[in-house]
Amino acid sequence: MSTPPEIAYSAQPTLSQKISGAEFELAQTSNVGPDNPPWGVLAAVITLLTSIALTALVPNLFVLPYVVYHYRNSPAPTEAVLWANKTLVFLFVTGWIPAHLLTLCLVWAVATKLGKFSVRDVFGFSWPRDFSLWKSVGLAISLFIVAILVTGWFGAQPTDLDKILQSSRAAALIMALIAIATAPLVEELVFRGILYSALQRVIGRLFAVLVVAAAFAGLHVWQYRQNIGAILSISLLSLVLTTIRARTGRLLPCFMIHLVFNGIQSLIIVFEPYLRALFEHWRPPAPSGALTYLLHFLG
Image (spheres, rainbow, N blue to C red):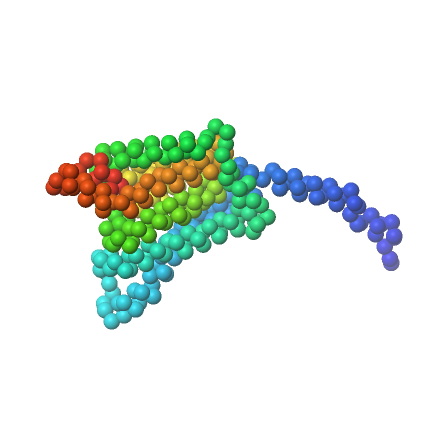
């Protein structure tokens, strides 16, 4: 039995229905923003865990061929032996660059739905009216000064990152480059971009701020485990950045503060030999005071 012509015709969408569907899709797209992201909590958590895995695995894979070749006729190297190998440490630090680049690709794919949405729109890469560039710069400098004071108060015990800085000049310089070229962008996009945006829609701004700030600080606890002052400083930075993200609804101020904060550290890493020589010249026989704590805090 054939379908009646009128029924067959009515099964096809009319022109008005097509227009209404297009308008609905356009409305959905136009509503996408930093506080209404096109991803959910599950995607955010998977992105976070994947970024952590990339940061942990890629540098080790990056140095694996060198380790296999260099120690092929030797007993398994100890941790102390590996830390003493300047080439290996340099290669390990360099491995953070491809790890960060892969993370950026992942964030782009999740946030934009493979190009369907604008990065600027979904993350809020624009300045709010009440939070200018200069306010971000001033706040970053203030946070850095507080970090120096906190680290000085609690003492500056050497950390694993200190070992990297002391390994070789090349390792220190590549670390300074990463600290401004990729680290602030990656960390802000993952934590206050992907993770916070999804959480605040489900658990509210206050709890989202607390969770994201704790997650960001917790990720750095192992790196700074020997230095309580550095842990407290990173925790304060994380809380301030996440609060600003919640209050402004924008990621750009957070990125700028993070960039300037890391940029100051990078400049000190670059000029540290000259600063140390100058300080030793004026304050023999060894550096002391705020500069000592500042140089130790760079880890």
